[in-house]
Length: 168
Image 1 (cartoon, helix red, strand yellow):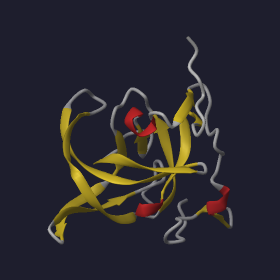
Image 2 (cartoon, rainbow, N blue to C red; image 1 turned 90 degrees about the horizontal axis):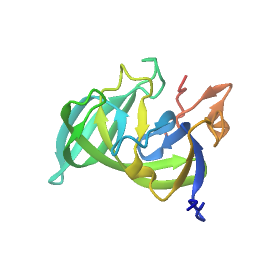
Image 3 (cartoon, one colour; image 1 turned 45 degrees about the vertical axis):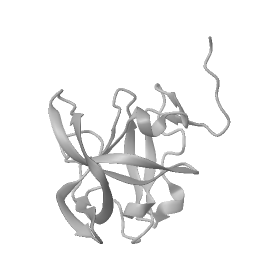
Image 4 (cartoon, rainbow, N blue to C red; image 1 turned 90 degrees about the vertical axis):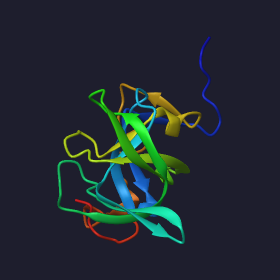
């Protein structure tokens, strides 16, 4: 039986430009990974704190692959802490946040595990839970939603949608 392309689903390749507007990240390359249940975001200096009795997280991230030139400082409410299996098969405890994901013109809320992805090829990984029912994946193609998020460009450089800082 052939799978159907449902109304509202978007077609994506194995890697796409994504935005995390609530975190001030206008563009970040994300790897689409159906082998991963949980989505992950490169984060470091993760500091839990309380705000009005709720658990929040303060953290930093570098949205550009293989670069530490741009640092984005973020704060987000924590959904909790979960045990996840890392790329090497080991078990880790990671903080989870809920935030808005923007892929092309579509946007929805997803959960992201915060972890140091400095040694990984992509600063963000989109797992199957975040994509289920919303995307159709063409694994042999890349950047079906656009090679560069042009609406975020400024003088040939990508800009953060929140701060206007260069992302390259």
